[in-house]
Amino acid sequence: MSFLQLKQITHYYFNPSNYTKALNNISISVDEGTFISILGPSGCGKTTLLSIMAGIIEPTFGNVSINNTPLKKTQREIGYMLQQDYLFPWKNIIDNVLIGPKIIGSHQEEMTEKAKQLLIDMGLETVLKSYPNNLSGGMRQRVALARTLITNPSLLLLDEPFSALDFQTKLKLEDFVSALLKQYHKTSILVTHDIGEAIAMSDQIYLMKAAPGEIHQRFEVPIEVRDLSPFEARKHIKYQHLFDRIWEELNSLETKSTI
Amino acid sequence: MKRNQLSDRNLFDNYIKKVKADRRHTRYMQLLLFLSFFSLWELSSQLNWIDPLIFSSPSKIFLLLYENTINGNLWYHMRVTVLETIAGFFIGTIGGIIIAFLLWNSRKLYDVLDPYLVVLNALPKVALGPIIIVALGPGYFSIIMMGAIISIIVTSLVVYSAFREVDANYTKVLQSFGATKWQCFKEAVFPASLPSIISTFKVNVGLSWVGVIVGEFLVAAKGLGYLIVYGFQVFNFTLVLYSLLVIAFIAAIMYQAVNKFEAWLVKKI
Image 1 (tube, each protein chain N blue to C red):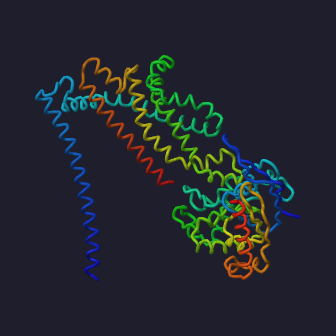
Image 2: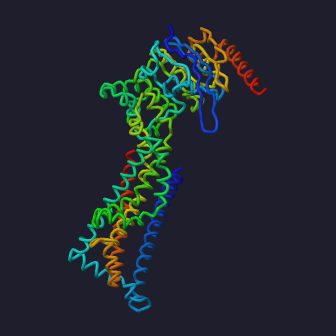
Image 3: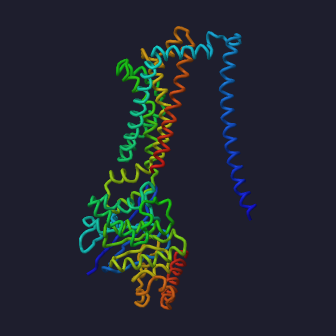
């Protein structure tokens, strides 16, 4: 029984002069505890798809359900992490992490303890009272992750959360996030245009093509690669094989679209 | 090595000295400008280079200031005008922010009201003076309204556009937790727009003065604006210039107060 199910999602964007078909007939089902990557060129509707999963955008057609319950009734189970951290610069770190519980209206004192614990787990115990501007990019993204995890979502949506970081920080954070998500047994969906990142982090990869956004192909990441940390996975021979296959597939999509 | 360290230190000391000397020099120049302006004024008035009846002279003005401070006249008129200005400022600013919120809250409302806001914004508000006075009666209330109406529309437009310009991803973060529109406003849109809101404060301080003084020109029986009109009617330009100086002084203080408030708030954010 799959945990998250997308059935025939189609989405249009309208504006006074034109319309775009952003997504066409997308069906995905995700098992609990797995890590899925959605890979594709810019403008293929990845972020739209993620926003639909998060319930921020209502799809034109199709429906999303978690554990067979329509999405609208299950808001709280979803955590969303954006391309940049979008920490509120006027709130200190601990208050930034506590924004989710505040919105939901859960018990503050209990949550403050939990937030502290989460930040300590992430190696951020020295900056609890600092402001986001005083933190490095990697630290800020870890705070954003803590903010996402504190409401204990069962589904995590990651919208290129590593793309704004420098390469070294990105590799470190990939390992960190991957280990953390395995530890908490979260179902996660990562949107990315980075083939390496998709292979290193996930169990399955959906390759999308643009205009209109459709699922082009689905790849299974070999079991040997899955069980390694992202950094180790990158060195595995099967990682390289899969990389090449996806690379070729992406290239063939591109040449098709230019013809 | 030692020589080098010493010279680093010395260089820094020299730099600090230079900065201080520069600042002192600026102050001297400002003081010089002030003194030469008033002495030239006094001199030319004494020697009849300018008509002392129209341009008065600093000595007469300061004498009047002294007398009025002693007999309480200054405080009496100043109090009225300052209270009207502050009230006008707050009503205009807070009202403008509330209107901006309503416009932000409903895109439809904004679309409907847009042309009216543009017209109202372009209209010189002091021209509404007579109507306001007839409608609300000649008194404090009309004058405060003059102080408020002059800034309310432009505040609402400026603050509204600040609300609109807040990065949508901040609200997206909150929406992913299921935030309501009001929660998005309170937690993201309003705090993110605070810098623009504070800059409208600075403009509004000046605008409220304009509204209140014009209001007093039209109806008041007390206040600094009234003194200007009265002095003009009885051809007592010492009184006019005296009122003008007091206004300039208090307006500068209010502006500085808003500046300090801004600095405090920015630090807090």
